Length: 173
Image (cartoon, rainbow, N blue to C red):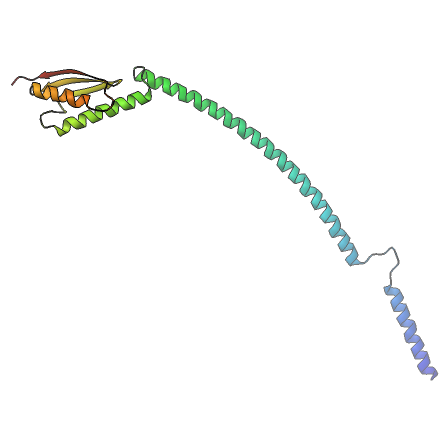
């Protein structure tokens, strides 16, 4: 029995020594605790870095927004200047008339010429139609007085025509 008791005592002593060796002092930390602590520190530093990044991006965004706004304002000013210069140049080229007047005069001329094409007695090739400020000038040749009058009436019937100056000449056979 002494042998069994001695064995039990040795096993108990070894178990106590093993448990004592596994037990750590109060200041020691396990590997898991060290990893947890490192992760927590990393999270904190990432949060601080993220906040700094957000602040910088907001600053850069505000600066970019201001610069784009200023550039847009400058572009609008330049476009307004170019538009005014273009309108002036167009007006000078059109004899002081606005672009709308020139377009309207062109439409009147085209309409009159189209009407002349439909009439077999009026030759578009022999009649020149010029419109300026709604005043239509007819130059060229017609076959007789009836065709001359009809050309004037057709021109005066077009919308936008203020006056018709008929300088058509009756051609002699």
